[in-house]
Structures are given as C-alpha cells and as structure tokens.
Image (cartoon, rainbow over all chains, first blue to last red; front, top):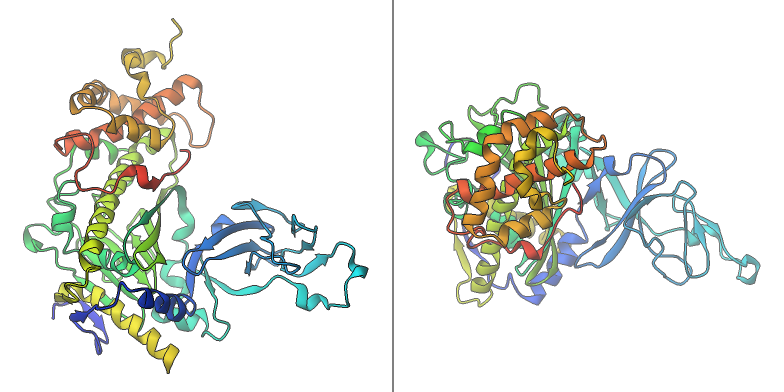
Length: 398
Length: 110
C-alpha cells in the first residue's frame, strides 16, 4: 500500500464485481437506497443571501422539484415545490426573490417563505382543514461550508453525523464565500452515474486522457506515474490530493495569463499558507489541488485560488446529468478577467475529455461482457465508492 | 468609418468579428475555423495581448464598459479560445476524442 493513506480500509475490494451495475434494478436501488437516504448538496447559501431569495430545481432520477428559500430568520429551508391544494407546481421560476412569499397560479393560494400557508382563496367554502396540514411539505435542510444539503429521509441522521470528519466549520472557514461564480456547465451524458464518480477519483488517467490538454501538469520527474501523495478514507466520504509537476512547462499564453491573475489550472500555486485546514490537508510539498468526494455524488476540487464542483445526478440506468461550476477569485478588473479565461477554457477542454471517455466506457461495460474491475492501490478512492454504496444498501436493508 | 476599438488597438480592427459576447459564440467561431484561420487571429493578437490586458486592467470589474472597450474585452476572451489548439499543437481547431461542446449547456453571459 502506498504512503500517505489514512483511514479504515476494511471491506474495500480492489477486484470489484460490477455485474448488474448498469441494470434498471441497480439504478432504482441507487435512487431508493442512496439518493433518497443521503444528504445531497443542491446549491450554495451565498446564492440566496437575503430573506425571500429562492432557487428551484429538479432532482433528476427522483424527479422531485424543490424550492430552497432564505427565511426572515435567516434560515435556509427546502420544500417540495408543490401547492398543497391540488398539487400544482408552486414556483415556476428558477430563481428570484420574494419576501412576501409565493402564490399558486392555479387558485391563488399563498404561502409565507417559512412554508406556512397564508391565504386560501374563498376559504369558507372549504371544510375546516387546519393550517398545519396545508403548509408546504418541508424537506430536511442544513447548510455547511456554504453548501445547502437536503435529505428526503425524515429519519436520517444529522448532517453533522453524515459529514463526520468533513463536518467541522473550520475546515473551509471563509473559503467558499470569496469567489465569483461565473460559470455553470451541464451535460446529459449517456453513462451510469457511478462511472462518472470513478473518473474523478484518481490521477492515473490523467497521463492519457489529458495528454492533449494538460500534458505535464501533474507528477513530474520524481513522480512520473502521478502517484497520489495523500488519501483520507472515511466511512462514506473520501478525499485525496494530487501533486503538481514542479517542472511543468508553461505555454506562452499560460505565462501571459499568470502574470495577471492567480495561478490556476493547469499551473498550481503549491503554497497553502493562510488557507483553512481542509485545503492541502496532507500538507504536501508540491500540492496541486484536493479532490473531496462527498458521497454520493459531489466532487469538489479545491486549489489555492479556485475551486470546481461537480454533481453527478443519475437520471436513468445509462444516463447522468452532470453539472459543474468553475470558480475563480472575483477579478479586480476586466484585464484580470481576460487572464482568468485561459483557465476557464482549458478547464472546459479537460472536462470534455473525461466526459467523452465515459460514454465510450459505458458502451463497453453495459454489454456485461466484462463485469469486474482490477484496481490499483492508486485507485483506492474508486474502490471506496463501492464500499460506501454497499454500506448504504446494508443500512437500508438491515 | 466609425472606429470600433480603442485608439491604441486600431491595428486589430480587422478582427472585430471575434468580439463575441458569449462562450458559445466564441467556441463556435473557433470550431468553425481552420487552424490557419485561427493562427491568423492568434498571431495578430499575441504581440498585443500584454497591452490589451494592461489596458483592460484600467476598468474595475462590474463597471460598464464603452462599446469599444467591450469589443476589445471580448476579443481578449476569444484569444484565449484560439490559443488552445495552436499552442497545444492540435491537428484541428476542435479537440479529438472530446465531448461535443454543442451538447453542453454553457454559461449565458460573461
């Protein structure tokens, strides 16, 4: 086993049986026993800073449409976006702000932003239903590290318990609130969501998949195979950090860009001084970035002055809706913003290389001609994902 | 003729077709170009890019730009698109073995 690995590895298989992984039964089981029972990250609190600010979104696969809204008490709440009268979709905008609440377009029922019902049109024509029955159906919702987490399971343990080692606020104190969000990408990929998670769990593929975009950005002469110097294996979640190549050759435009803005993909500032302890958690000499996997489906890449988040939402046994955002520090000027574009464009190109490969891999695997993986120690985080899945299945069936 | 770029960048007038406001448009123009066409734009812009960035550093992020300055800004963003296939020495303007950008939902505005 390589150095730099922390955590309990019991129950992790390197020779993985993935038979049935792409079947309809397996997909339904993933939805029922994982997505219905897990804390799912659905956005950021900084997107809804003021009372009345809201977002709506569909959760693919489960096909719930949810409403997330900041209350007058500053709490973030989540609801099923459904009027309690006869089930019409309540809020039909993706985002907005409405301190006074929401009204249903069907019969004009109104709701406060804490979810309680306020006005029922022609109320005395109704049997004496109590107001408590008529409030919006609330979903468990908690915020941590700026992420808004929801859980459809009323019986689930707290977010603190779920996050475990990743729960403490100080891990990312102040980090996520200091960025300008400028880019939201999404794609419908014809592949199962599990292999999407796998693709972002190891550095091994970068030698090949990204040879045309980021040829020498990781590893280097003393680490040619791009071994991962730090991996933390937890009950459900895992994180690892990758090593930058100290001899990375800068393209002309890369040199230009990083004269005018903080270094980001595919050059890295290895100095993590001043950053909260969640970043460069392994205190690496050639720290490039961390990859933190919040089970089930959030991949978070964190570098000194940037981060990327990716969400793999299963929408069919052979389909995933993949959403990702790229963040850089808010530019001071338009000139700096031009410089940052270098990194945005390369980041998009790199992501597209991963996504292309996934559709090909799906085509190969779904035939079930081959139903096992032979993983290396460097792919421990890939193996770990399947242990986490099994732990959720055991909990659901136990 | 109405000048459409700031005075000190008039030399780049013939490339204002690259002054595209969205990522989709910039990528599509790149994808629709031959490497030679990209190289014409890239080579013309490259020696000026340090100056372009420094000039645009005079405008605080979030303030409204004049039409000329905004054109220059968008051309700077396009330069970053064009540079990718050239500097990475690709055989075409579009990556091989890459998820089609046409299938991505891209940011609406920058």
